[in-house]
Image (tube, rainbow, N blue to C red; front, side, top):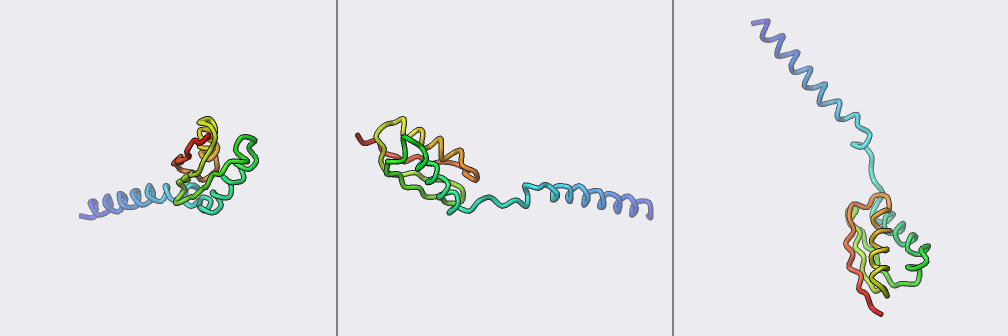
Length: 102
């Protein structure tokens, strides 16, 4: 009986140690930037970009998903805006709702 008890105890300890190993992962405790920070970063990136600085682009962020709305003059500007927004730290996805208006 003690033999089975000891094996069970060893198995339980092993399972707990394996489970605790995943808690040491740095990404588990890392908190990404806030939605407001992401929105601000995207707006700053647009303002510093030559083709997008004069465009009327509205940026909203919710849980890391950036939604772009507004008007641009070319499809290339729409694509560029989506690419720039997607490269900002903390952005999980981009919903590009920009409308091309000449």
